[in-house]
Length: 184
Image 1 (tube, rainbow, N blue to C red):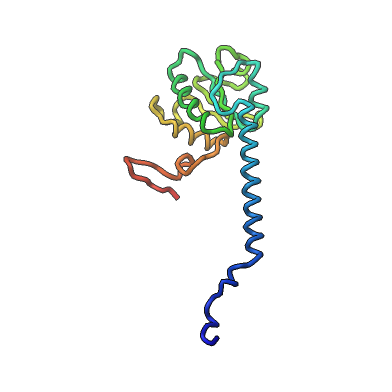
Image 2: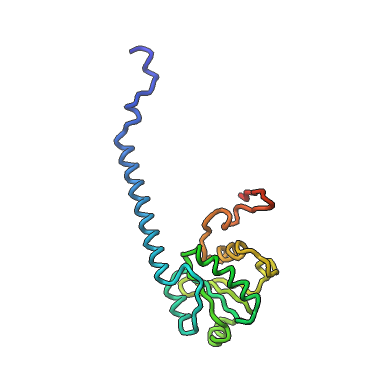
């Protein structure tokens, strides 16, 4: 018919190629989700997902048998170590990609010396068993005992052992008195 040449027909949108592309994308996504779930199960089997205490004999196997690990060297009588414990226990439950542990500095003199730990609390991040970052005391966390869990999370993300789960953790959003500020 005349005048209908410029109109689109449904046949233009029913391409067999589109179905193949969508099916391929779906298969890729399902494959990614299966791999992610398998990684989660493997990490949970390795002790990820909770904040645990290890002893000196467990230290090397713990940091070398997992890709990402964080170890808090502490003293049982130091209040600031208890503050770090509280924050790390929260972070460990959310960040299954990293095994987060604590080690009593009094009971592991060899590693305290080897890693040159001179002040507590000290948090050392490891990738494939190699120390890549350390947080000593609270200076980098605001210099106060009242720093937030998010502050420590962001600092560990900067160190490379945690993955930012959302824009807030990655530091792309700053929340100030119920006002969202998007950075970037």
